[in-house]
Image (cartoon, rainbow, N blue to C red; front, side, top):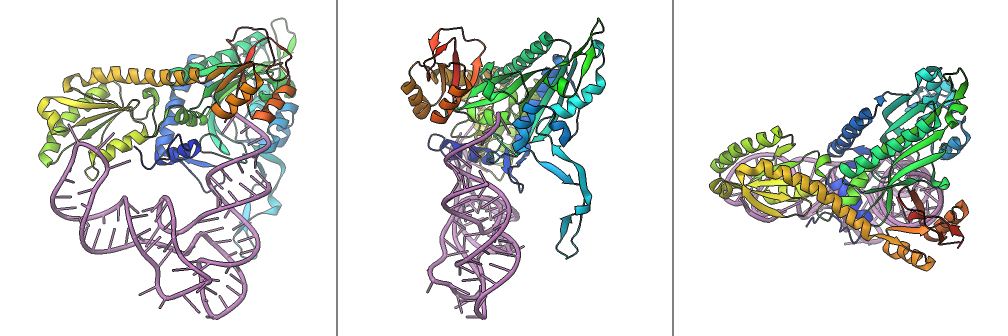
Amino acid sequence: MAKFLTNRDENYAQWYNDLVIKADLAENSAVRGCMVIKPYGYAIWEKIQAELDRMFKATGHVNAYFPLFIPKSFFSKEAAHVEGFAKECAVVTHYRLKNDENGKGIIVDPSAKLEEELIIRPTSETIIWNSYKNWIQSYRDLPILINQWANVVRWEMRTRLFLRTAEFLWQEGHTAHATREEAVEETERMINVYSDFAENFMALPVIKGYKSENERFAGAIDTYTIEALMQDGKALQAGTSHFLGQNFAKAFDVQFADKTGKLDYVWATSWGLSTRMVGALIMAHSDNNGLVLPPKLAPLQVVIIPIYKTADQLEMITSKVKTIKAELEKAGYTVKYDDRENLKPGFKFADYELKGVPVRIAIGPRDIENGTAEIARRDTLEKETIAADSITSHISRLLDEIQSNIYQKALKFRTENTYYTDNWSEFVDIIENRGGFVMAHWDGTTETEEKIKDETKATIRCIPFDTPPEEGKCIYSGKPSGRRVLFARSY
RNA sequence: CGGGGUGUAGCACAGUUGGCUAGCGCGCUACGUUCGGGACGUAGAGGUCGGAAGUUCGAGUCUUCUCACCCCGACCA
């Protein structure tokens, strides 16, 4: 048992905070609300980036980079968009510092005031569409399929490592299309890329759906989302894809000539996924011993620990390990041999469990004698002793099995914590006492959604794509409803 | 941004009505013994007590301001 970790079942929030710090993923910085992502945490983000980037390119996208600063005037061009972000923008007003004449250190030079303030991007639609305006004249210039990896700033009042920070890293895709159909198709394609990524690489089962008007991205016609269930019964929005219609094209006057020479506004999408995913990863899979990382995203997949008393033994073990390590690396796995001599094996075992390394191999004198190795898997904490010459094939199978098991476990948890109800008091009881997803009828009005939120703190996470139409009555108002929607408390 | 709490060595903390050279545990360094689930002994290093101003003969301790973090709300990915 990890004695340095708060028990997950006693205090979930504290367990999460402890885990992020103890597993050395990130820490708070001197700047309010901003985190330092430490090497181990950043390595996980790099794995996420690498796979997503590959998937974006496979679907025809290219990367580019747009400025961090956005002129204030750009921001105010799309009314809903401004309103959505105005309350959380950092603003640059000056461009120079100088020494205080009273010797009190350095001050902002009042004479260096910007004529127009710059907003630090909370998202880049406006600065990008201002560029697209110059890039698009004809249908031959379309589609534009661009992604950027960037940092953004949203001045949050209350922050938590990875889940909500004032500055965070993400990717944002911004595409321009000639037709509505094509843009809608792109929006769907990217939410599918996200769900595919979440389920196959992060072992995180997600529910795809539409956002209600209330939860929609500011400036979008439609927002699609993937929603995941965390182990404390709260939902987490893990990625979003927006159909922006012609809203930004109109705001920035981006028109193109179609084949007949007729001018029309360009259709747009945008889609994003952030470092919040690292938080999702932690909260969906980890336990009281620490992180549990799916093999496909673990920066380190296999760790080998020698157990020895004498220098002779260590030498024998090391020589055996070299062969095993080389073979595993040849098979494409990331392997570390931890032969630090100042730490006991038991300490290392616990430490790599805390870090979530999927597979641990321990080799001692007994194994050398018998031609065996002890294999321990992180997800179930089971150990077995196998013949040393079959390690690579064994571990190859085991890593696949762990990946699949972590997913199945999360899926089972979600299934067991998804409720269907038509009864308001039961709805309240589930939300308040059990947590989880609740599928219930809703009359489709923002008014009802708000009232449910006020009374229970539960929101509509999404209107799932794949729920069949079903006649029913709104859980709250009793008015007619054509289908169930997904309710939960959320991060 | 409102309410509550906490800042003392890398970490976690103690420090009495204001009083002498600011302490314990873990970690760290060296050496030795250990090593199949978080080892032990001996010796040692490590502090602008979050920051600033004030009260006082004297401030870790009292006052004011300020910064950061944690918890609960409102807001949000």
